[in-house]
Length: 298
Length: 288
Image (cartoon, rainbow over all chains, first blue to last red; front, side):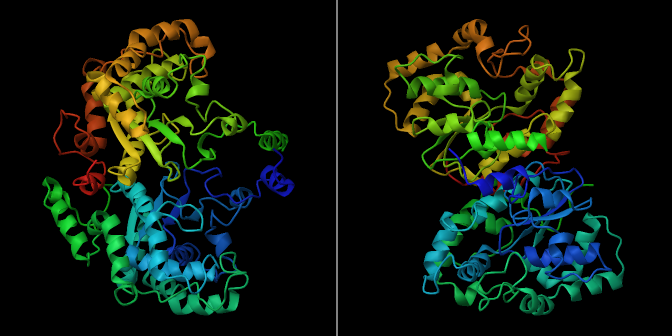
């Protein structure tokens, strides 16, 4: 009946991790994605767009764009409004302004494998195909953000094409960072200049984040006390799954989420999933396929 | 600070009503729907199936099919398992076995308007039309908008073995047929006579009788206006006379794609639809 005293004191002082349990204001903007989908990069891009005069690093990112899964409700309350908050949560109706980043789940699975080893959730010898299986079935040992399909599906099904929702693909941000951050700036009503865009890209580059991680990795809430021999900032590329995921893992991911992947523009590789998906595309509603580039109606 | 300390004391003793923070067990079964979509009716039907020896009423329904908004964490923790839990929550990945009831949002809007009058949230003079605007925006409920609630669940669970989708309208048209699906889904043996008996005991007339006698005993009806009933018409299509054309158009523009997927006939065509069509493209072809 009596829970840990520490936990109760933390609860009373609102110093426990906020997660979903903190007051949301109507002017809050959220950067949301499933883990390992480019959230940290986007977070730096947004922080640099919003605070061009700050030197954005892992030492102050929690103040500039706080992480609701690492900070307390009390901490979040002290952040000046309008706040930009980082989150991995599945759909929450209170979030009215959302930048949602989606990434090819085959690359997410691969990245998650390294991440789980870094966090010591699994041993180095843990088979990759088993990790992918955990990923597909929702048996990952970290916090419950739903499966990739549940997280992505719950947001897109409810908010796609709505005002207050900006859908970005990680692969598009890689391919043309300037174009995508221009969309972010417009969405957040940030006036841009070529100088601001160039600075933002440069200050958030994978190279810079890697050197920041080397210098500050033991201090940042998301990397301290974790294995330092596995980097948090990985290759920052797309398509790594083609060379590194076993075919049965690719097939498992595509069998589970093929329809959603196709709709998001991720080409399927395994034959079985392709057959299922083309059967689906042949339905009456294929005409409804819209370009992801289409912006929500004003 | 005092409020936080009080909350802390409740937290320690497990006296808080958990609502969305419910501690979920893997064998929990959820009776889920957006509010005003036939949840109470389904709840009584399931209560009869699961507890054939009890006689479910408004006096004991919170114990038989508990509501995490009405019971404390401690009470919920002590219930025998598997628990059959009533809920209106939007998508939550921890819920693994779900009976989801969906209803034509045009009827849901009308029903919620009257329910909010009953709860004194809407004064009598306030128009349905104003209400529908707020309803579509999702500001009349803490469970997301109708479209957010329904789409969130369908996008993640439609076609999965732990998800049974029922339409309120089908339940009205063939109660025993739909109840047989529920019994099978829950692994409960029930013959035709018993299904018929359950349906009869939960008829709108019987439910009205119970409400008349016990409204003051039930968390959802006590301290509300007694001149506005909780159990209303229990019929589909009330929107045709109860909503204005403008309200109907407003709802169909917001959720036309989703309504069409669910088989609700529309009065408007595709032009003017602003809602997400994403779900439809994703769901088509997935077997239920």
